[in-house]
Amino acid sequence: MATRISKNFTLDELLASKTAKQRGIINAPGVDEVCALCALVHNVLQPLRDAMGEPIKIGSGYRCTKLNKAVGGVGNSQHTKGEAADLCIDGDLKKGRKWFEWIRDHCEFDQLIWEHNAAGSYWVHVSYRIDGYNRKQVINELLKK
Image (tube, rainbow, N blue to C red):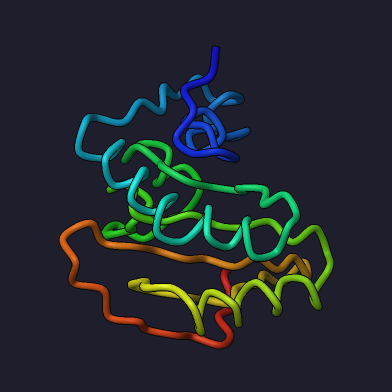
């Protein structure tokens, strides 16, 4: 049975990773990381879900250090602290922009990034710091290699 964090989000979906599964990486957070994930869900993800009235699919949430390295994440990634999630927009750029702008205008957050890669995939990266030091840094476009 999945551990429910909020009305619409479970811990399992914030830990899921195809790369971890393929490579046999155990992506298990500690207590601090779980607390950070809960704060992210309650302060950003669930309010976004409630406002949009549609499911929010998580492409990447918590990543242990080994998994973060395997996916090419930066060494100080907030994903390794349970503070960040990448939201899948499944090719719907209009929906992605709507989510991005809603978070920007209605939520407390540390970073909000409209990201894409050379293959043409787009996603919304959002982070929230449990310590309350949230910079509200907005990056309108970031190309990931």
